[in-house]
Image 1 (tube, each protein chain N blue to C red):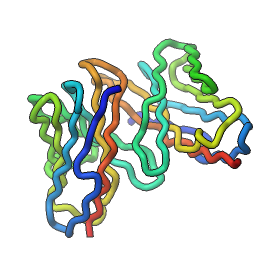
Image 2: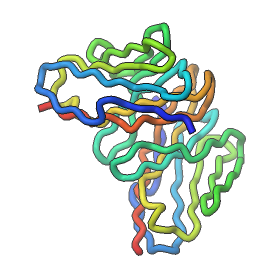
Image 3: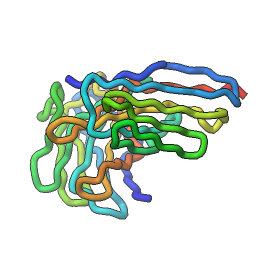
Image 4: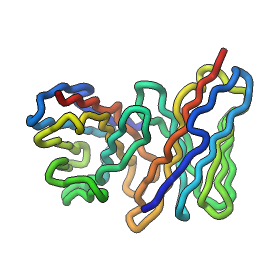
Length: 116
Length: 111
């Protein structure tokens, strides 16, 4: 099946620093990737839809200047958490569809961010 | 905005017993997907339902999409310890087909 990777898997940073998370589709091209965050024991919340070659579409309540998304190629999307604060600590997960318009999403393994 | 609720939130069953989780959307969905997430893991796609009243089976799992396309259910027959995890439904709707995840049902199977 389709494989999506994320890097890093775990990151600890100081408050005020920026953290970049990469999401890669390893064996397929993804026109669209999705970024979610998941707090402990809670559901996944869609943050934004990342579109290759265009600006990301952010969900209501998600600060676009704080969570910078760059979909540089058909196999790579990055999420940068700028000036991270402890409340940004969460599990960040990306997903990608196999084909344009494909409904099935394949999820990356997630990145656990801890901001001290 | 769209809300997708699941009940129950938690379920403990004895191994061999059946289990059902229900998913209810505040809006009509174009399709619904089900995912399983093991503790510490990421969601894994199980199935997608598209048609009104659709029923699909995967071994011991039975998925159903309501006639009004606003609710869905997942039924597991004769649970096993490998069924442990949190089951999420995810409904797709809206202009750009936004996916909204349900609140999840955490299943614990007692051997």
